[in-house]
Image 1 (cartoon, helix red, strand yellow):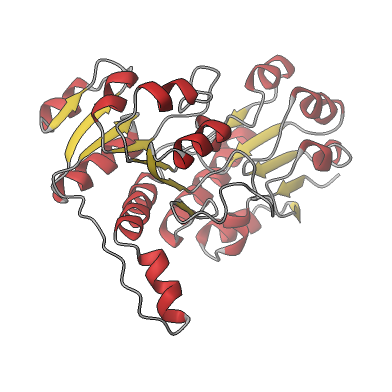
Image 2: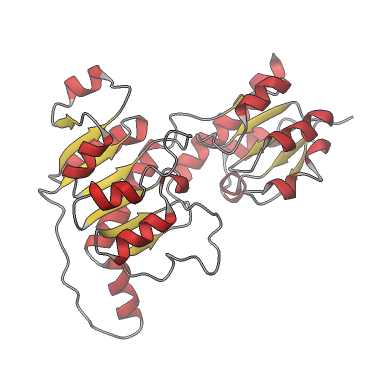
Amino acid sequence: MKFKLLLTSTSFTDAKGEHQDLLNEQGFEIDVMRGPLFDYELKPIIAHYDAVICGDDEYTAEILEIAKAGRLKYISKYGVGLDKIDLAKAKELGIPVTNCPGVNQVSVAEHVFALLLSFVKNIHLEHNITKAGGWKRHVSTEIYGKTLGIVGLGAIGKEVATRAKCFGLNIIAFEKFVNKEFLAENDYITMADSFEELCQKADIISLHVPHTPETDALINIDIIKNKLKKGVIIINTARGKLVDLDAMIYGLDNNIIGGYLADVLDIEPMPENYELKDRENVLITPHISSRTYESVQRQGLFAVKNLIGLLEK
């Protein structure tokens, strides 16, 4: 029986390049679906595949049980985050799961500043005004001299920090597992003793941690009411569930939060009636921060090579 693969990463599929060539050379029977797929979409089909190259599909314990009872032997995640895969259940069932760390930090860090500069300079508003034939000119602000709080000083957080220095931002960071060598080489970064301390000092907060039970709703009503500086801008290119939606709405409505800039949402794709969609103090992009040609090549090749490596074991 021919090896059957399910490919659901839209980035992998949409960008032509070496990653697709390498995959096609393997001689697999490949079915392509446009993810991310919900568990109810995977349920009737997943048992028919030997392997998947997936994006942020919902591999719950139930889905993995069904997959294991069928043909599924391998999961290769295109990208870094594994929070949509029940890793404990996968390990219990003997289904190896791989991902692609260290490949998208440049593209995501650039996107952070694309969001930030677009927002503070009102680019998103002014573009729509002039496109409609208008000439209304908003007063913008500068980021020079402001304090940027980086939550999570991993690969992406480090890239954000190095770029922030060039813009003249003061940088404070919070990271539980501090890389002392990096800090010694970049002594312009001040480390906060706690997330709460960072929140009290930062004019801009950029989130760069994975979604775990510990980081779920990291930005919550208590933080918003009691810790944030008034008018803070929050940037989220990590995971939507780091932010409690109701708390964010409260912060925006009460002028505690000056802007929320998100490339990720708690529900993706964004529902038509999503509560943050039409607010001028919210800037949303559709999970594209790592969707550059260069990054897709790196991640795609990584994901295919990971799968080949699993097959060779």
